[in-house]
Amino acid sequence: MLTTLLFLSASTVFNSHLPPLLPWQGDSLALMQDEGPLTTVFELSQGKRSPDYLQTMDFVDRLVAANPTQFTIKNIGYSHSQRAIKMLVANEHGHFTAKELQHSKKPTLLIQAGIHSGEIDGKDAGFMLLRDIATGKRRDLLKKVNILFIPILNVDGHERSSAFNRINQRGPSKMGFRTNANNLNLNRDYTKLDTPEIKSVLEVINEFNPDLYVDIHVTDGADYQYDVTYGYNPVFASESPAVSSVLDTLFKPTIDNALTKKGHIPGPLVFVMDKREFSKGLAGWVATPRFSNGWGDLKSLPTILVENHSLKPYKQRVLGTYVFLDGAIEALSLHSQQLQDAVDKEQSFVPKELVVQRRYSKTADKIAFKGIEYAKSFNELSGQQEVTYLGKVKNYTDLSIYWQKEVVTTVTVPKAFLIPPVYSDIVQKLKLHGVEVTQLSGANTQPLKQAVVTEHTFASAPFEGRFRVSASFDLIAATNMNLDGWYSVETQQAAGELAVHLLHPEAPDSFFSWGEFNTLFQRTEYMENYALLPYAKKMLESDPNLAAQFKKKIDEDSTFANDADARLQWLYQHSPFYDSHYLKYPILMSFEQPPIILNQKDKEI
Image (cartoon, rainbow, N blue to C red):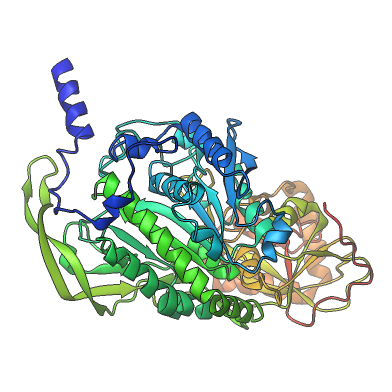
């Protein structure tokens, strides 16, 4: 048994279970140094190791000590285990407040590493880049941009370190875990905001208003030649198409050119439709707002998701990330005005209708793709055909790619959402999202609509700690509403599209869908037959129309006619004793002009 464990340990650490590699000897190897006080753990280990949390925080301190005039440390929050989440702020001319940095003539780049802490390439690449700035080797970079760098976002998952956390990833020798200490995936939390880590990031974005947000991951799945893949929602599916177009036409060529010159192969952010049959084509994913890049798309915050290829060696991936960041800085420096113009355009426009759900098209586009040759054979362990990648180049000239082009759900954008005062926690989350919220005082001056659940389904298992719910709705008039103390969220604002995704109950990443309003499915008052029946008799006698409806339902619906409980329930529902709030979504919608605010209370709750 011990021999088996030793064998398994060695085979995993040295990656003997993974597909063969293509040879690589990129010019980016020259970026590494092997001596000096700011040589990283990654470099000292020849590209095999990544520092633990304490070593990481120590290196942050050393960077600042080496260049205190341009580097500062900001503590942006704490994990549930009370580990500090730190961010390094780098700018050319000394210490700036966040407001001063926002008004800097240079654009600001936010680099986020370790949201999935097993995918930690960004930390070690960022340290090398900042070290080269601190020591004067890359003094040019801070002449181009200001940099915000979060080396580890998922600090608790980072310390759940093991050689056995990701079976399909080549290094580092030990790596952190995907989720945080509460087993929540931070890159599924951008709408519901259950984690202190993502709340900290949103606070940074609100405070510093970065011009470009880069979120660095490592992907999995099929084998292919690309070592650095990255992307953003494509123009056809983007809610900020002008921003996506600038990233596509101006940023991507600059970044791709930098990577290619240094011996890396940049590629598109795509997945495979069938992991056992690569030739069936690629899946063109469109991120929803639970993900960083989907959230950024709705906010008109230019966001690039980097997904380095897990089967490439750690050294190659980290060096590719360094080059990617160098290219992104160059692109941001060259094209910041075009990007800002696109952001301004998108933030000033909110459509009348908004797509909130898509699915993969049945019709494929065709692209060239740098794949890896593979063979298929029957595997006795799985009992089915399995893929074996052979480590040989296979270039596809017209591989099918299926984008999420098919629209499933479109909603009409209301003029405003009206939130009852009891949901102040939702208001706080909206403000963290950068959504403008105002408090009302006085009587309602407009017609309002309320969504009523007609059918609903709860998920059979929890996802990200919550039982999600999907539902269909009728929209009814909400009458006799006193809006004194309520909150208004107008959709014609910079974060208006995001507000719709958060507050419209039909949106799959809304607060409703994540279970924030599950109490509306509870009935807490019930009837007794001995009380209901005599009351119902008098009710029907006094209301001939209602009596006719009851008789018609009995005559036309035999199931209803033969079900005593259903008949009693119908009578109870039509009585004034029935819970008027049951199955009604408490956030109201206005499709007219926004409500008149007689006394706006601009205060924090």
